[in-house]
Length: 340
Ligand code: SF4
Image (cartoon, rainbow, N blue to C red; front, side, top):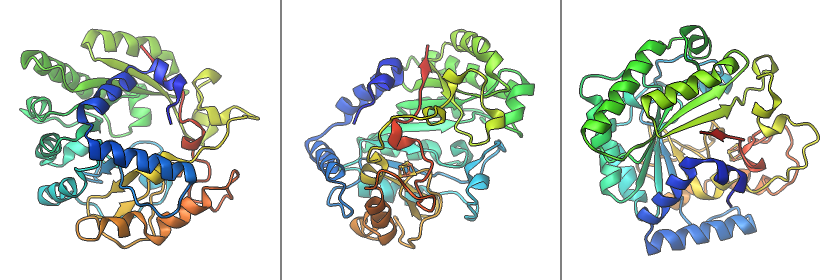
């Protein structure tokens, strides 16, 4: 279940472990064990519930990233924002068993005006919370609201420290604004005397920013974020891969002997889009089910024919290129990360 290599290098993992103990209850633990048992047996139909939920506050984004999931995978879902009432409904339905809710999926979460109330409601419901943002658009008072919401983990995605490199990947992004917002956020955290959220600066390393690794380390120290993660790019476009092969994702290492494991997403997680549509994970952007998390029964959702089919086919060691998981790195141990 645990990738030791990752555990050893990631401060965020240690933080995540502390959240596990903080938010654990007997029903959650029993459900987690059941989910892992079903994963071990690679069952297609589950009697456990998801212990991790990813909610999409909105699918609207302001960054225009190269390799944006929407464009790469041809996701044509209509633009929109989840209503606060719908989000609360989801939290109420899953709170007995969920350890963590991630508020981000293919869109900028701070673009939903209700995001702070959503996080606060999840926190008050006894669920750990995580949010990832490009921190481009922060209105007056947003830094205080984010910190006071009870958010546990915050990732700020920044992939360059100069406009030239940052703008190459996040094509509508402005690095000066991001750095200013980061500084305001850190000042607010100090002023409010809060230890949460645990703030990670995430830097996706590619060919055009690999020379800025030392610079981003300095930026992390200067702004006093809690953690810096250098994340190898997952692009299949070899033209953008960094020259240093240690920064590749493992899948690029030829003749790998890594064994394919049963992916925990299929047995323990669920992605819920702004309109209630569901996906089995972050990488499978098109779901064949019309079931809706706002209204339909939880077991019908997690055991819908599409999810069962993907689980069933995932028993095989080698997947055909028609399988929705084909080419995904997660079952091979995920990513190599470097942490300061
Ligand atoms: S696409 Fe990847 S993360 Fe998603 S279920 Fe398949 S293996 Fe897991």
